[in-house]
Image (tube, rainbow, N blue to C red; front, side, top):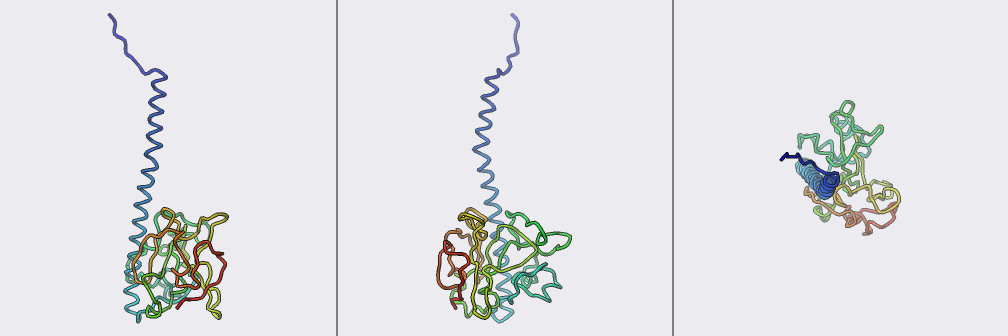
Length: 239
């Protein structure tokens, strides 16, 4: 009797391919979620280091947050910091780490504000300063553990700026503590990780917050509004 080598039939081959495709469809989202969880943890670690640097800074400067300077290009360059001290650049001498100011999950913005390792080797961030507390003493902030110092932006750039921003210094008003990205409920801020983002508070601690849970009072602003309010509404400081 002659033995014959038995090969896969076309149907058997298609069944194997279908099983592999099903397993891939099941496992790939799990792997992606695990990878994003790791990046979110790295981002939270970054903000905790920023928080430690902030606490050391305030101890050296009479319990006062860094001075107010908004829209600082190349914010972490020593010459720029000396000329225009800002809410991130002044903390680098304490952290000794220029790489803690950007979340690993977010892409680089395009255009003039893009992070460029050649032109701006020291300056790359995806964290936004809260204009309502920048330059303020911790003594005047009623609950530093409940008031945001920085929140996350959905991309990174060489440009350190404030959100919420100071709308009118004369009137003492602020604007844009949240900002919708086009039509719908997706936000520009605090939406990087699992429908939320990592937030650093004025007492130096950091934690994850869901975007929909954020309120204007989290930034020390009055009146107290939810994230569904008109983003152009003007607020005053609550302290």
